[in-house]
Image (cartoon, rainbow, N blue to C red; front, side):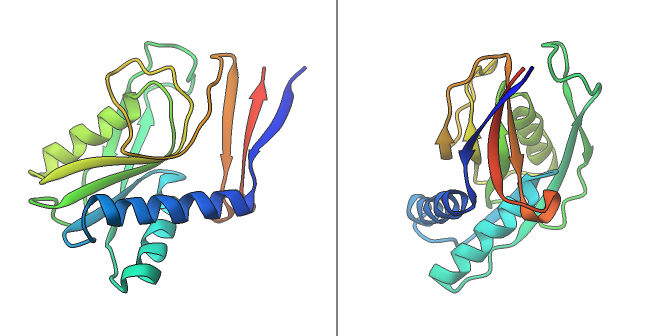
Length: 178
């Protein structure tokens, strides 16, 4: 029997994304040469929302690109699972840009690492930064996001489920105990 608890509701997600947008502007002293890269699936709408919020503040359209990173296997519970990048056809040049990878949840760090490898393979960015909606801990690699919506300590038995309007028809983050 699984137990589910809501961690973030729609309003909280909006506030968190507003804060992350302001932190991006502040850390980079504006958004000149910033490129947001959403990691498929839910990182893409998050990157687009952040770009929209940045536009509201800075009146600058920050480009948004996408990376498709999935796993060799669907079983996310095994530590041996390695992410693989499916498309490295970025629309925008990453050379000398501040590339901000955007994802919904950071867990082991393997997806972020695969994304960083793909960005480095595409060119030489000035910086690579990482923005996540939820940091649930349990890193297996020395990777720490620059921008975090919410730190949520979890057990490995728990699953963090991010739902976004663009993909799931509603905005909320749940934690399920299996």
